[in-house]
Length: 169
Image (cartoon, rainbow, N blue to C red; front, side):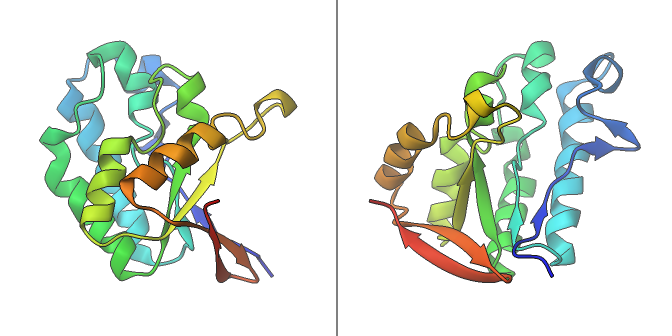
């Protein structure tokens, strides 16, 4: 049995975003970002996960092609994603790996976390998405301070798929 089920979108039409020279090249920002966000919404709507991860991961490589990620043109679908997260009782992952990657920003950004909070979202997890020992916990302390200013008071953890909320110290 699983302690925790984390959902994420990394592919669009069979192409992984990490293969960015294939996925982004020749597309407008709309052509690249809209299908990715549609996949995130579809993943959330399944209700299969305890947490949805890095909902704006598309900016990881997209910033190389289009500059800083402007989420306003995608406000409607992002709001639908966040409302679906809330209505399904999922938590929203804050992934700090973007702080050391090309976006130089968390996934999701603080602006999207503010929107989530304004919609009534309270359930969050946090992780550094470390692929090396040196990155374990990277960016978490500074991010906790920032999300506390937004109004988040606890981090969700899971045991046997039951949520446990741990206060942010």
